Each structure stands twice: as structure tokens, then as C-alpha cells.
Image 1: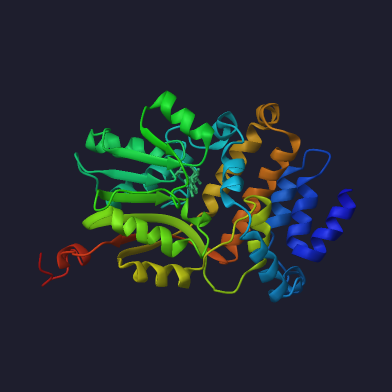
Image 2: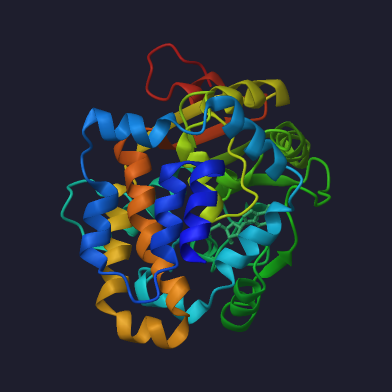
Length: 352
Ligand SMILES: C[S@@+](CC[C@H](N)C(=O)[O-])C[C@H]1O[C@@H](n2cnc3c(N)ncnc32)[C@H](O)[C@@H]1O
């Protein structure tokens, strides 16, 4: 069965997908360090060529196009509803962020690096008491809590998630208003929010949905409002083999490229006032190490297949960033009008 699946995967999705799926379905626990090294190793150009040559671009495109008809929210739910207890084993205990941290020196602990990220995002969101603020894709309410710590205002905060486990956890532990709803399909009041933000959820937005949800966010913001985004995307329009590999972890996922995002931001009416790039690799390695250190507990919570899936997921994601196939970005999008001094702070002559 495993052998048959390997050859079928090889034919339809190519070698990267077939090998990873073979490893995930191993009847025994994978040797974690061997798996990490095997997946992330620096490749001989010939191995890279062999990995990427099949299937040809048009087949890859066709296979991924067929995924557009799958409901991607099912894949997202499946990923996050694995178990809160499982995620607690490897996410930082302070916030439970499931998104890229900022290692500014390189030797930070996960908690320090996640605090760096939270501080950077807080500066970009710039929340004030009394402002209406929504997070699209709120996870375990990590950033909502940080925002509340800084404004002292919890009543005006709101989060969206597709995960039942997360929504129940937030309700039980923090009591924020959480909408268990697909934020792409949700209805929003017009000119209502002062700030909106999204951390590590825009990766799931498919190209055909991007203009729709961006327009909804634009309309939902008050004039002068801001939308802060943190997500990764591939740099080129061409679909990489990684797009097929992503199906193993997020079935139905069809990625949007950087050029498409930039065009869609502008078409929705936004002005981009901040862009920065961040390195995901150290976070992925720290999550991997934390999970492996607690493997006995992990295997009591999740099945062997799920454990092996994560043993492959972290290095496969690392490889995606190490090869510069994709980059993690933060953007601030502003709905006009915007004062010049806000766009170019500290630039002599910029008028408020
Ligand atoms: C990688 S987690 C990030 C969570 C959190 N922002 C953080 O930084 O830890 C992605 C979150 O986005 C949510 N999500 C993704 N797509 C969504 C959608 N279309 N509608 C609602 N929630 C979505 C998931 O349910 C999950 O809570």
C-alpha cells in the first residue's frame, strides 16, 4: 500500500511530495535528527533538478487548480484542531504564538524571540484604548492578549478563527469575543474598525479570494485606518514544487504570490506604508527541538502518523525559506487619508 502510494504520488505530485508522504506514513517513529538533516540538506544542483523536474509546470498547475474546488477551511481546521495540548508542547508558553518569531541576535530563546515579534507588531498596530480592533486568524489569542495588556481595553477586541479547539480555549481562558467563522466569507460593518491585523493566516488566502477579502477589510476600516499583515508567500509567480508539498499539511491550499499580493493591495485602494522581511528558520528549528524533547508526551496525545507529519512539516518549511522560495513579510496597509508625517516619520519636511 505504502509502495503503491509512493509511485502514484511520484507520478502526480513529484519526488518531494512522494518522499515526504512516504516518511509521514512510516510504520515506526521517524528518526527526527536524520529526517531534519535529510530534508534540509544543501543539495547538489543535480538532486535539486531531479526533485523539481517532474511533474512539468503545466501538470503542477493543473493538479493545483483542481484543489481550488476543495474547501480549504477543512484543511485549516484539520491542522489546528489536532489538539491544544499537542501545540502546548512546543509553542512558547508565554503567548502560544504559532507564527514566526524575531531572532534579532540569533541566540534568543523562543519566548524572547516571540516577545521581539509581538513588540514589533504592537508598534505597527499602534493600538489605543477605545479603538475597535479585529484579528483575522487569532490562534490562541496570543496577540489579542498583548494588545489588551497595552491598552487595558478588552471590550473592543475581536478575533476570528476556524478552529473549534482554539475558539473554546479562548472563551474558557480569556473570554474575548471570538467569531468561529471563515473571515473571507464573514460580513463586516462598514467604516467600523480603527485597526485590523492578521498574523500567519493570509498564507491560506487563495488568489481568487484575495481581492474579495482585501476589499472587505478596506470597507470595514474607518478612513485613515490600518491593516497590519504578517504572512509568507512565494516570491515568483511560477508555482514551485513546494506548492504541491503544502497539500500534505494544508489540503486544498493554493498559494498567492508576492507580485499578486502587491497588485491586490493597490487595487483594493490601500497604500503600503511599511514592508519588512523576517527569517522563519530559527523559529521552525526551535519548535522542532521542543516537540522532539517531549516526544513521549506527544505520542500519547497524537497518533504516530500525526507525530511523523510534524517531524516532516518543520524541516520541509525550513527548506522552503532556506531556498528563498518564499519569504515572510510584514506589511502595514493604510486606508487613505494618511498624513505625510505618518508615512515618512522623521523625514525633514514631511508635514502632519
Ligand atoms: C498559524 S495560526 C496563527 C495564529 C495566531 N495569529 C498566531 O500568531 O499565533 C493561523 C490562524 O488563522 C486561522 N485562520 C486561517 N484562515 C482562516 C480563515 N479563512 N478564517 C478564519 N480563521 C482563519 C486559523 O484558524 C488559526 O487560528
